[in-house]
Image (cartoon, rainbow, N blue to C red; front, side, top):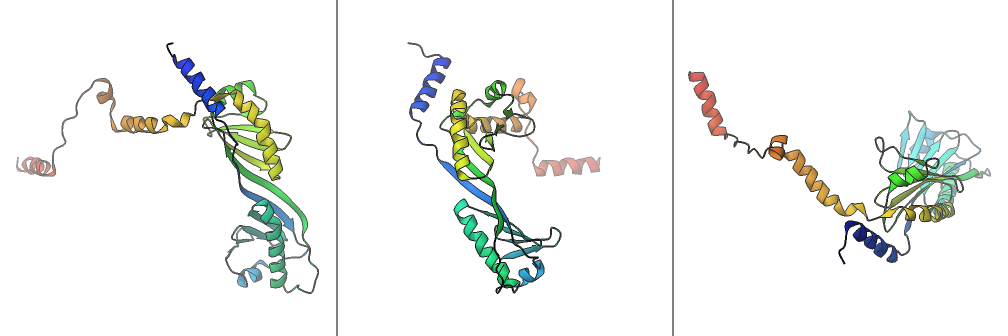
Length: 244
């Protein structure tokens, strides 16, 4: 049986689909927001704290991954399990720095604003065909950015899909919403699966470097460039030009 390119592609896709295993979803960071019922003297807190950066222009204090506002607004960038614990620790620290240890200060309006996660599908994705079939849910502008944006309403999240099979989840408010979004998008992208395009990345990169280093004459007419004169010859040429 003669194996055509179409049958070769189909067989390779089927082989990859048979070898599909569990998809590793990695939570990169979680951003939460909460408030404290007091006005914060940022200059005072910055003077009596370590590992902080006081940005006067923005009116915030940056302590590692925590942003504090003078009105009591906090933004913490950690994992979901660590955000609540870090929020309590920061609130306690601010309470001590402001001399309000005798008062009862509690966290208010605690909520998770954004969960950023990534995962890798075991196959490539034809995002051009995906955008044609689902024009309402997708936003594909290859001239402006890499990848396709998929708007998920329930759960509310934005998935950035790439041809290499990598998916980035943005705008989710919990890790469970991230899992649900991946479960929803998996059968959809699996319909448009293809051979991983990243395999030819090294070859295409070499070709690009070759095209940049070679001129149009060398490519189409096979014209060899004359060797560049050495510094000695150029010096003699300049010398003779002046003598004549």
